[in-house]
Length: 385
Image (cartoon, rainbow, N blue to C red):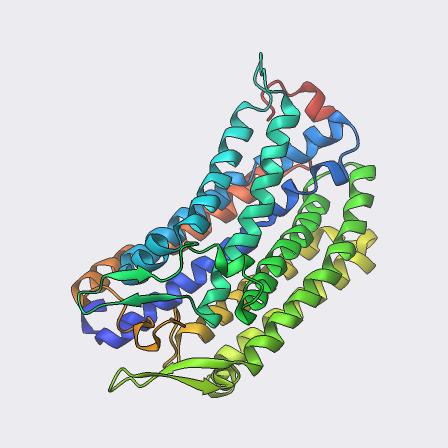
């Protein structure tokens, strides 16, 4: 089946697969968003226990999606993986350690003889929620603004700044930094919006639910503000286009806007996703009493569609998905950064397990959310997080 596809088609197929996994990951980051709301929503030890256990039932799904996304990126676009992870390693190391903090915290927070105390592990969870969302969003922002690296004829990459990726978020003298950070903050506040919806969907505690409803709108406003700033920025900035025949890279005015126009299917997916996100927020807040617990499916689905479309805009239509601002001709595309035809064919068969990953997430979610968490359950559960 896949052997009959052209090399270019396989490259496009794999960028779509990676994009879908990245979109699902952004949705699953509601766990990280919820971890930053533990003390905002939980005013007593029991309420915090309820919140942490609601998130604890899902944190491994986020980790599974993250690992699957990273594995797919490595297998299909190894030059991108080597350039980004080998060059901007401080950003990726911070993300890695943040997720290590998360795993350790869920494992040891409620263990007997916990000499660090539960508050220490709750602080670790907050750090994971803060850094995990902002840094992942910032890293994805470089797909549109570029990074400072060069690649020689032997496909060996060199990161051209001593900060190893930290400049992408903290060098405020560079315009692209504001774009990157705005996407990072977009993901952060979106994760808190989704977390508020998730709590409404999975917890049966009036006090927590009312605070979650308040946080839904409190975080929706900055989320929309940063998202609009990011969207306006990528529409007006020059994009990184390449000639598919010569391979030459050049700057093109309004490239990402043209991508939406020239790929109408992607534009429809993007607009549908944005509308769904906004509609879900409105439904979750203003129709809280009637169907607020269903809003996460609308906003969550819209999140997946929107992020999926953004990834496609960054990589399809002869666009450099990992551009270099140091040397334009070192920019990475789905053509020059992909694995060999043989590898892509072999991995395409492996990709058939992606629906099973999605099915696993759905099954685990449904099984763990058959009954909403209550105070009575937490008081009797001796194996809670």
